[in-house]
Length: 408
Image (cartoon, rainbow, N blue to C red; front, side):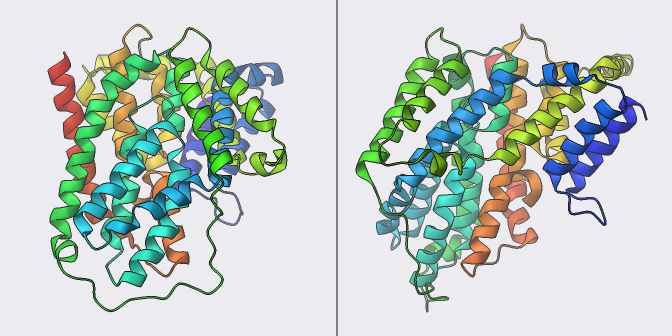
């Protein structure tokens, strides 16, 4: 079986998220595709190992440890609980929860932010008698949008930052303004769509918090360590020091604890995501050796289309991100970018991240919010999510194109 066939089958499987009759998820399918590339002789075992971008994996791994420190220290839950005082002012509460989620997602893993915030917000909103949907949908949208502002906001940005050797400060300076514009647009859209729910007084409580629910204890010292580590990372990222070395070094310091066990910290590392990255590196390297990306680029050129043109890049990134999710989409599209043209990398980062809001399967953050909300007794349907996600995504992508026009 050739590299092209294996690549297509792998990406179809990743897009579907399963293989009928097998208990494989997206990560398992990607890993199976990587194994098939080696078994079929497309790549040698040595070439497969060399295909994995170790600096990107190390950066992702280290940042997961920093985020785990804050999660175990109760920082995320304490922050979520801290904004509940605005519940009697629903618009302010929505603004505060979205802004908080966006800022935290820009500096830490947006998936973890959703994981920690959703149950706190869902249960508090149910007890208050308010409709939880606008606030939970706002949380998902804001975490995706906020994560686009920096290189360390989400996995696809980390990948682009490492592969494209992008400057941390220049990336944030270019991507943060459209992220802020998209966040304001999302807030306005949600306020417009749910204006009655955000205006009326709370009604009869729709649910009761299950007995025995207990939030993680807030540990001031452990949370302070996590915040100090995050601040140190940002400072180091502004220096010439390799990002992955700086991140691993800071993660190593957090492991040297008298109270927080290594097993607890490492237990919160998303090994499935790391495996997905490694597998996709191998799959994409297989088609590179077969010359398929170059052939695709030449085919586009013959049709008069240039993938590096911002409008086309936005459209293709949005489509692929909602077919196979944004990490595989970015891993594939990054092969077409010019290392000497940062604008192309910025546009791909923003569009692939903003595209995650379009439909439920567009990003892991959406799925986390939906699953966590269901556990609390709140149902977020595909239609309800799309009703917010589609206009928010279209507005966000319009902001990107307007920003590109302004900056070029």
